[in-house]
Length: 260
Length: 284
Image (cartoon, rainbow over all chains, first blue to last red; front, side, top):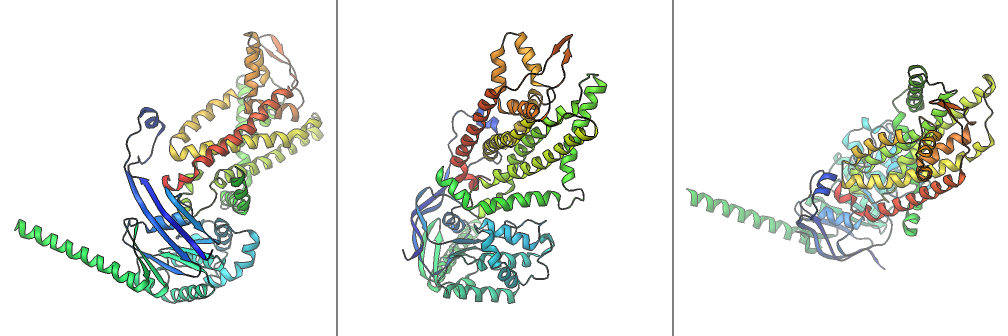
């Protein structure tokens, strides 16, 4: 049991055609179920993340990166395959999701921590560290509706990281905040790695991915296209983008020559 | 269901946070705070009393008290169910990002409304005591000790219905409109504004006393009647169309039957919700 996350042949399909706001009327009127088109968000993903690994997941929009994160964090139940997770997971919440604008920073720390499955006792232990790390001491008792996006990001990151999870999931949120605070985040992530904790993050920022992660996973159309040393995986990914780009340009050139 | 209850227990702190947040946010920016939640039923009861007593000129002694004792539980029922219809959609950002047992959402709105209801009942008792000692009203009967049991049964019923409604509203967004209509209809069908004896009188005259028993097994009918009988003295005989209508003692077997239904609704609602909660994140 030396792994933190293990996915075995995991697929997740979604129904593509779905009415925006389904109504009782349409449900009662359509006796026959209309055929719905299925889309595969993940298609037979098998991977194991060892304890202490830092993994960057890269890929184009719609390649299944966020779906992967959601399947791991139990937000989505996989259509087939199994997901096993060992240890307490923490998700760094995107800006607005975990905060209530009317409540103060301090109240939101308790609320946000509760969402992540912590108890009052856990949070009493860690609240001072969270506030210190966020550098929001002067604002912590003001409603968060007065905070800037950067301040919210700092609070969110501090909660996720200072509550000592075994596994940290991050979905494209590290890019916010000033350079100084970002540097502090990377330092904290390094300390996190040294403590043998596991990090899995999704990003479009390939420079950061190469800097932080020891392992890269490239997803394409819901499948793992490459898995290995971060720099190599990123190189392969960029290479494919270049090919697509060239193919695109050839196509444009062909259209232009054909039309002109 | 045992596994789900165990997980729910693990997340009890989140449930508490949601309840506290609901109450805090509702009153954060209003000076009068809790009194706003009292003002609504009191104004409603005062209005209905004026209409019944002075416009329709039906002389019922202490009508306000008999109305209020049915209206406060109804407010809890109505507000909790209306809130529950919106609660899953209102947390869509959270649902899509983090895992937590989804049932804390409907539970939290029911519990937040229960807090308001308990506070309203405290004020109601103050009102009864005021009547007792300053206006020579009737003493509060010992049967008032049943109140916590009745409130627990009603809470079980409301939780069960809130599970059904919050879940169905994810799949069909017009559930909330249907709910508003149904609550309006049931407000008049439930013996809130009138005593249950009038329903009995009508059904008895039609030689359908069995139908009255069925009517009294509908949980909110039985509970409204039970609140009234246990908290207030029997009303003085009313005269309707020349014949007197006497107050009847409470039939506890019907209350017990309705209580069992409350508990069954709670269990069925939880099972219904659990069977569907895993897809919420994909639908909201």
